[in-house]
Structures are given as C-alpha cells and as structure tokens.
Image 1 (cartoon, rainbow, N blue to C red):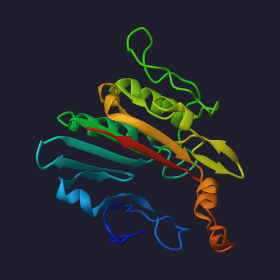
Image 2: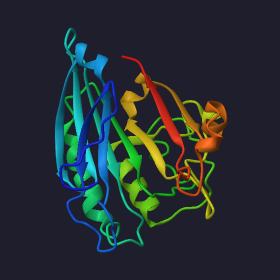
Image 3: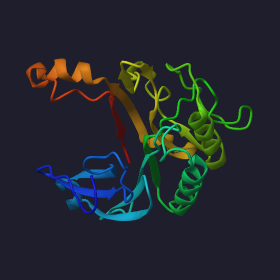
Image 4: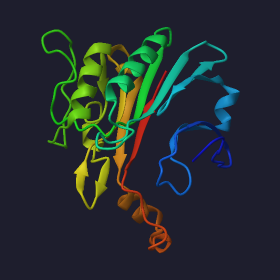
Length: 235
C-alpha cells in the first residue's frame, strides 16, 4: 500500500497507516499497518485513532458508550533485522514504550502484530518478583528482535499471551519453506490478563482445508505464510 490507499471490506471500517517511504524495488506500495473494525461495534463504542506518528505502529481507542470502559489496541509491525526498515529496533521499541504509557488511563491495553521476534523460552517477566504463569514456547530459537522484545516487556510490565492463557490452542505463527517460527504476538499488561479468555492460532493450511478453498490456490494466488492469531476478550 502507498499514500492514502485503503482496503475496503463490506461491513468493516478501515483505520490504516501506510508506510511513507517506498522501497526502491517495490512495484506498488511498501506496506503499512491497520485495523478493520466491524460496523456493529460503532453502535457500542466511540472509536478513534489514538496515534499513528511512527512508521509501523498504529493505535486506536474504543470507549464504550454506556459504561465508559476504554480499550486501547496497538498494532505493530517490525521488519526483520536484516532489512533496511528493521535495523533500528531501539527507536521502534522506544516509541512503543511511550505509546503504552500514553494508554495508562485505559481499562485494557492490547498490543499485537508481527515483531519478527523469536523469543525462545526467555522469561518475559522477572521471576520471584512478578507472579505470572510461565508460557509454553513452541519456537526454541531466539534472535536480536526477540531479545529486544523481552527487554521491552520487562520494562513495561507486559507479557506475551501466546502459549500462556490457552496453550493447547497455540501453534507456530509463521510456516514457510524456511521453517516454522513464532513471530506474531498478542501482548497485554499483567493486570489485564483477566480480560483475555482465549488465544488460538490457526495455520493457513488448516483454514484452507476448513473452508474448502483449495481451488483458489495457484501460482498466481499463493497462500500467506503467517497463521491467523485470534484473541477473545471479555469486559
């Protein structure tokens, strides 16, 4: 995507933040981040953009019309550390820290996205200080982005929900010819875990079989390599 391009899906509204800089080899746009919000939610919530000042990060606020319950959702994409866009992870996580602090008045904050961060079984909390269940880790590899993400989580008192709240429904979030990895996460502050009831990961191959759309796959229409990660909330 580029410029003011938007994606339209019937029954949803798009909140997007397209990447301003275009890669020299990009034929079209160079991507971005965004949210689709179901139209029915606008009957219950006042929904607005909280922030979109840093490339790869967007935040929206949903405030319930009747009880003032406020949900802040931050969507993020950090490119791989071997790409031009992913080399400055320090600035990326510094922006996230600032943004998380700006949502402190929200009842629930959710951070989600593709961080290209492989955290292995590194603890995302401080043992003997923070009282959290240890998550079950499928991906036993770690990389530089993963270490940066772990530092960010400890600094902000937030934790990964993958493999923690419903580990039996967990799976790899990226499956390609290069292998399997977990790089897409749902993250929340410690005191907000109580609102998070179910996290499930469904691979694209499972979804193709479930929807019986094998005939839609061809050399021109290849399935994505990232899984669908779903979080169910209550408030």
